Length: 85
Image 1 (tube, one colour):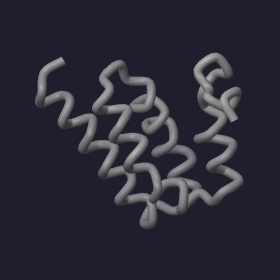
Image 2: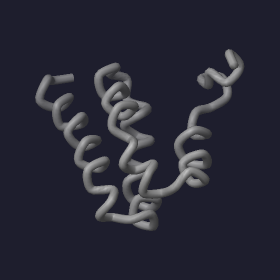
Image 3: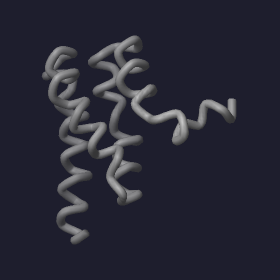
Image 4: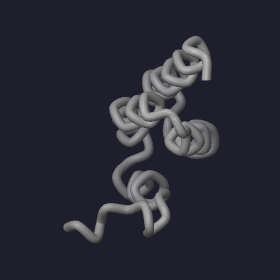
């Protein structure tokens, strides 16, 4: 992957996070969450790291219940770290 593409993916994630308070919950759920999940599945570590560090605005906009449904449970059980707790 070219460096510029990597920067676009990271910038996209930061932009979604910054726009979350303006978009409110319904638009975050229908637009931002699918893009965030796609970025979280990216093979590049830096993109996944950017998702992890810049999802607070989206989580705050959609609330704790929707965050648990859409963000925490989006990983298949084999990739989840719940078994470590």
